[in-house]
Length: 504
Ligand code: HEM
View 1: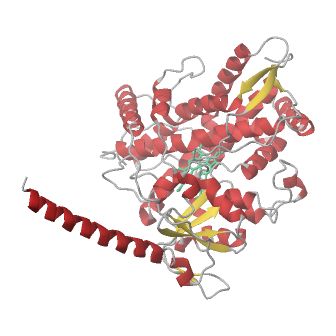
View 2: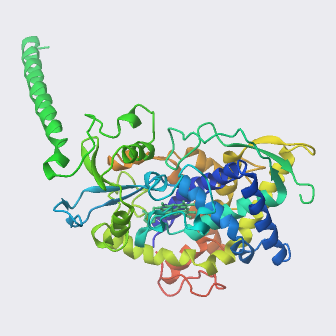
View 3: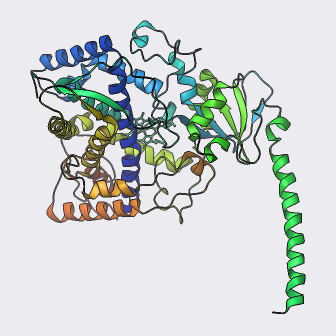
């Protein structure tokens, strides 16, 4: 495994990890501020788990916070971190119980936001009610906040730990003030994960108990214009014909708005891609619906059981995401586990999976807790000694998540609450995430941040190797993989010293 591949995947973890965890943590805090009884139960759950573990927040302590788990599950239901799952059909797939065939190469989109807010699967879908999971008031088949099957989120355990520590620290140290006038969150028309328009404000207070050849040119011009006209006419008819793809194949379809298809609202900046797709979900009835991403036909799956079958039982026909990466033009994506296809993906996924075992995450837990304390210190400094103050939770949780990811992934001990101008924050400021539609339309994604990350990774690896430094983080495990060919099964052995000729 080369340093480039290590850096690419660490960058991917960084990008995939911080916005999702920050959103889930801040949406949960917001919903708790709307439901005082649920808030009280969550506070009690956290306190009881702490008492059981001698007031120490350890890996085991957070496993015992069962009610908090329900709260987080309900947030990932109502506000799924990623609003859609996507796959590409990799073998012609006969649609069960029909004569229709999904052709190999067709993009398949599953609207998580659509499924998770569908009355059919989750009664009263707009009500944030963690106890629906206790009472069985949901269809488990439709609940897939981390995706499903072999390609589901590789780091869901880590994601849950980060969110749980953030919320546990918040509930232990501060009062979240009940605010009956808080309304439904309005979802922003930007961002890949679901974001709240205008941020997420909640009122917090301190808890007391714890802290020139003219004619020739003219002729050429006329020729050119004629050619242009012919090309435009041909393009017009081609595009019109292209927009009959689903009709010709006999699939139910959503009447396309030429030339942008479902991306029309996205183009007008009225909605993100995830929201535009969930609008189509809400406004249609069939279990599959043909849509167009500009001229590209894609299939929206509206049936949870079919979606789950595609992601799990029939994975062999849907193992790729269908996101095109140009190895030369998009070096930051090439080699990333999120983007790889077929056997390349499988082989890397197998190598990376041991990074996220409970044993490894347990060993890294101390870091997560330390960053949680920094968040508590920051909030304590912001809040008055008496009374409450409105705090924008999303930015607090983003800072928390960035520092955790920086530390757990790269071993960087930064405190962005105190020193916002550090290496990792500077990288995050340069990140200009591609929109989902941009990835679908194969427009690529070029930017500066991955190169900065690569330099940082190179320097850190060189420094660790030169001084024989070993640290409990993901970079260390990837150095092990590079130098020893595999990640050590022994959770206490973090050394990455080269054996034989391993590594490059
Ligand atoms: C609460 C937080 C998180 C949520 C809700 C979340 C959600 C998701 C979802 C829905 C997918 C797509 C799964 C599919 O297509 O079936 C995904 C994939 C992925 N996630 Fe997460 N994620 C979270 C945290 C993280 C973190 C912390 C990391 C890294 C440190 C991460 C790394 C990845 C990667 C690498 C993939 C691609 C896996 C592959 O293609 O093999 N995620 N995540």
